Length: 108
Image (cartoon, rainbow, N blue to C red; front, top):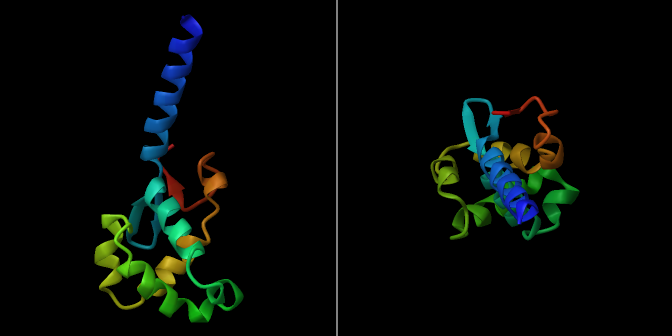
């Protein structure tokens, strides 16, 4: 019974810890979970973005139109230059971010 309680406490702590991590791009701050969702949405988009980052504008306009996009990205979708921010966020290595070894990640 103690091991189950210990595992539940560890899992709860990890969940709270992952929500505390913030990813910064310039003046913008986003939660790590939202960046993960953005990365999944951008991966499911066209493969042209992976081949040539300059073609990211069309794929990120599709990401902005996606209803599963986290709400904290909606104001960014309406601004000029948002495709560059999205492409940088899509390139953030989240596995490194979760151990706080990446400069853009804060909140550890």
